[in-house]
Image 1 (cartoon, rainbow, N blue to C red):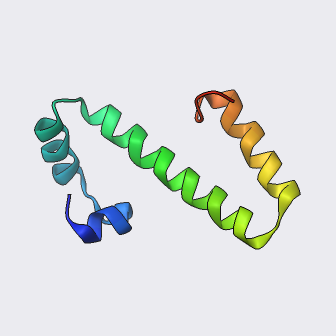
Image 2 (tube, helix red, strand yellow):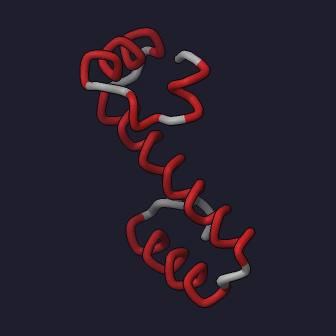
Length: 72
């Protein structure tokens, strides 16, 4: 992945995700899941920085139900 793609994974199109998956030896679904988890963690970190604890706890509960964060 390029530096731009790592900073803003939204710029990844379908063909690029296929190439990343092939290069990593995983399925495209796994790449999509990783990108989604990364974006969720970005949101959580922004909430922690902003001090919005109630919204943060609500978000973590939602992720817990979907299996988004291991160990929680």
